[in-house]
Length: 419
Image (cartoon, rainbow, N blue to C red; front, top):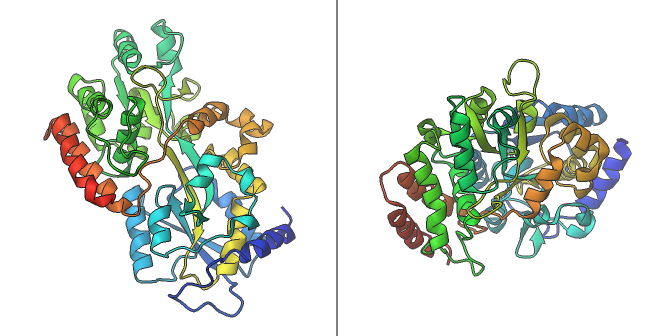
């Protein structure tokens, strides 16, 4: 991509500081210079491709990537701590799609003038995750929804012609496969961290319920919420979910699926790339497929995921940071990253791009899942809300509380946090 085009895009974005400069650190006269990108650990190695292109073109405004911890909760904690002390250590921050309200309300990231961006080019559900009270604070970069990874070879050997659409079908398919092979049935992410909030929200939504209703209040005293939690609790009790999965986050679950220890696995889009590697790191390459998550009575409802890019309110090189946002979320950079990583990107056009669909055949399935996905609770006190969910749901999965007891406790705890 011509660097002049980045500069043009960045110049437009520079106008975006709709609220002016925030207090916290004094920017230099140009607002330009080297910047630091706070980014989660990216296991495919694709990130270097787009950063290297930028750095070769802008040697005086190089981007340095600082890896955040692997777990989402620890990522958020580090970003929050830096923002609370008004640190200028990070210029561009990578925000989980559900953190926008918290970071915007606390003025830790700068507002963006949406008129300076081609907002119509982004997937609408993804764009909304970057908004707070009608204003844009973060630009969608990665997006996605949970997918069901499954072993095509084992289903075929068991005489099963398609992946399960309902929870009952999933359980029945496991029983058939286990007659010919000893293997773990199904697992998502159940450790006491952000992934548990995601998986619980999906289970409730896939049973027809919701954690937070349209008015912003908790809605956990419903039969649907109970059925969702019971699916997870009963899965651990009857062995559908291996006991070891109580400690699963994305990466250890992914590794077990790729080692051939799971028949079905709920995870994000990037696993399509790592599971398909033919360098010996994956034992399931060429022997797996993807499908939408199953639900109680039909296809399930995934949690809308993704990562957005925002400019720290305490950056001293905001103009460069804005240029980089324009570049990283532009079509050429997104396509380069998507081809190399299998992460689902935020631009609608990429889901029908011939090169991408050929390289990542799962994209049509992912698009379908994204279009039907729901976000996690979008609340200012998100950190407190997700901590309460993790505590009470983990207690139920661990057998320390019954499903009804856990939901009643969670309903009471979320009430004050969502007012």
